[in-house]
Amino acid sequence: MRVVKERIVVPDFRLSPRVDQVGVEERASRFTKRSIKKESKVEGLKLVLSMIDLTTLEGKDTPGKVKQLCYKAKHLHDSYSPSSGESEEALPTVAAVCVYPSMVKIAKKAVEGSQIKIASVATAFPSGQAATSVKIADTKFAVNEGADEVDMVISRGKFLAGEYGFVFDEIAAIKEACGPARLKVILETGELVTLDKVRRASDIAMHAGADFIKTSTGKIQPAATMPVTLTMLEAIRDYYYNTGTMIGMKPAGGISKAKLALHYLVMLNEVLGEDWMNNDWFRFGASSLANDILMQLVKEKTGVYQGADYFSID
Image 1 (cartoon, rainbow, N blue to C red):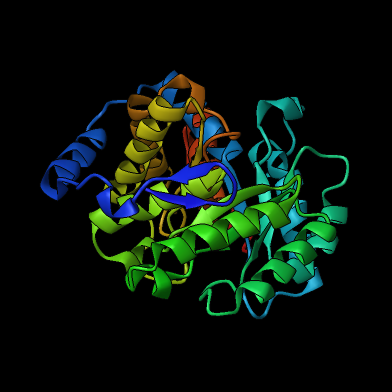
Image 2 (image 1 turned 30 degrees about the vertical axis):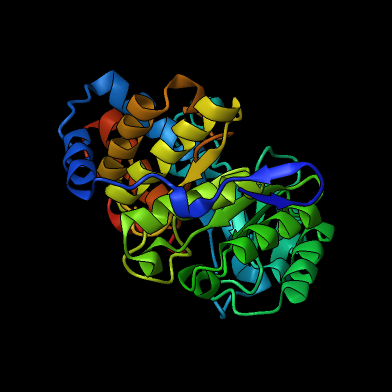
């Protein structure tokens, strides 16, 4: 055991449970074979929509692009039922809009009057290759600009070199810098390669203070996969059994189709249960997923698909 700070005892993360990759892949594949009937499908699609962090994280982001994304986040109902007179409550809003720190203030103003949160990436996203002092400053800037949530990246180089104490301490420092903002810790699982390392990184992040653990930045392939997400959900389950503390989960990158998102919900329900089936504890990091959800909802409502150009192009 290693003692960190005053009276906080941290496990030896070298002893994290090993993962049966074949077993995980087999179980993950079973979640894709569940049959979801019409009414349950519609409710599931709406639940997925409410869990999306609508995201733009490009070097070419402009204030105009961010404002457009925020407008879309607030007006999804227009695409679903623009002229039927149906109540806007028929569709939920997305959970959050996720942007770079420099765009937080713009996004915050653009979603005024809604329940939509503003999330910001930080800590030298997406590489994480910066001094801890720079990462702390980046985090504090995002929070001071109005971010409700911070998505940080771990130092994968340090993790892969076996410097688990460094990774733990850095996450703990970023958590402190977040103040009231919730912290999502991105593992970048595509660079961790094995499920054993995914499990170890999940354990480190949760013990260090993560409110959420997140698969990916969306900049590395593979990004989110069902076996990786299952491994992280099981880590969350074990942490909850041991501590009584709930941790959120966010698969991000590569989830662009409604059918796949519903498979993730089935997995979430069967591994963690009903308490996690809301956007306080589960998110999808996505940009194009919202459009496919809207397309499927319109299909369920009208019996026909709208063309892809009927929905906004982000």
